[in-house]
Amino acid sequence: MPKNKSIGKSFLIVALSIFSSRIFGLLRDVVIATTFGAGRTTDVFFVAFRIPNMLRRIFAEGAFSSAFTPAFAKKLQISKTEAVKFASRFFFVLSVSLISVVIAGEILTPLIIKVIAPGFSGEFERLAISLTREMFPYIFLVSLVAFFGGILNGYEHFFAPAFSTVLFNISLILSAIFLKNKIHIHALALGVVIGGILQVLLQLYFLKKEAFIPKPIPEIDDDVKKALKNIIPGIFGFGVRQLSMLADTIIASFLAAGAISYLYYANRFVQLPLGIFAIGLSQVLLPKLAKTFRDENAFRNNLTTGLTLCAMIIIPSTAGLLFFGKPLIDIVFHHGKFTEADLNATYCVLCGYGVGLLFYSFEKILVNAFYSLDDYAYPVKVGAATLIFNIIANIILCFGLKMGAPGLALGTAITSLLNVTFLIRKLEKNVPFFKTWIKENLKYLLLSLPVIPVAIYGTQTYFHFNSTLPKIATILTTITTAGAIYFATLFVTKDKTVMSLIRRK
Image 1 (tube, rainbow, N blue to C red):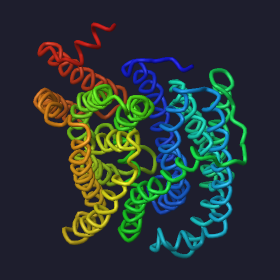
Image 2 (cartoon, one colour):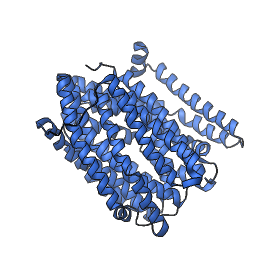
Image 3 (cartoon, one colour):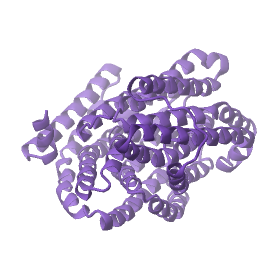
Image 4 (cartoon, rainbow, N blue to C red):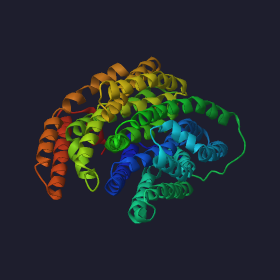
């Protein structure tokens, strides 16, 4: 049977694994930015990669994973034998579905490119079609990774699913470095597929060691039917999110060259705290919430613990990104073909995204809370209702107010706030938690204020230097100082979460 680890311990494992993955992800993007810059060619690659990535989120980490993981965790609480049978039957449905999606994608790629990037034409349109077809098999591979990871998460093993992306990033880095002169941008497409294979192999190793390797069973019993029924609203829910991203891509394709790349590069910095803390916490919480869905107090405690940990870290991280983001972008991307204009444009986009960082984080945890309660429909309704708002807001901000790419980022942040508001109001009716939780967590806004002057001073100091070593020293000093001051205030004010972690240690 799986071990019963604390949320803090499980989160630490996931956070460190994801942190390693994000660091290699940034290194990957440094290599891409330095090698290919931020022009039409990189725009094409990011659009092409977004298609299999989008389907991965819908079919792998999205609908299938959100329906499978809580159902498997509940089965595992009752009987390992039943859990194995359920996973094997589910595996069959997943495999058939994914193979069908890949085949259809390869055939319909030209049409897909026309729809999501109508601003592309000529050689860029042909390149987008070619790259997309080369990367479509990645959908099948990474979906297996998500499925196998769901099994491991049910056993409360979180390392392999979180760490596997490191292998993916290493594959892209090596492909870009060693194959760029031979096959140019196609080197990245090859790196994507090889990275997917490496991820699958890592999951299989730990499945054999700590759980079991499922074998597809061509049967569909009542439990699988129930999971499949939950997948339908899940597909719409994650599909709505991806439609929102596609709408951004469509709008950005009509902007000046580089807009899509600015959105991508800025998003990398948002994904660092988001991936480490919000996604990591939601990954840990999903099986735990599923196992305690019948115990209202335990469910509430797990949910509020996750949200509190998230607020405690994400709020000061937001302040850091908004006021110290430009030096970070400069040190990571401002090399080679990445120009001063690219730096300024990317920072403006980062500010737009940064405003919504806390809301993106809460959204992921709250949606998983609904899934644990077998309520897959409400998040879909919320997403569909706010999708239209998101598109209208983006058009107004981007073209009406002439904000360009930063307008797209800001529109996404505002929409996320709206989503979180609706999710909390609904969840509060089933599991009252918000009033008590929000009173205890508003203090993190005040305790994060000292981070701002440290970040501003660090930015001013950074741009006084011309050489790399003093710049790196300034970044490390600024981050360390801001972090030390923030956690010192938490300790002095006897923050309950910090005191609890210290006592456990």
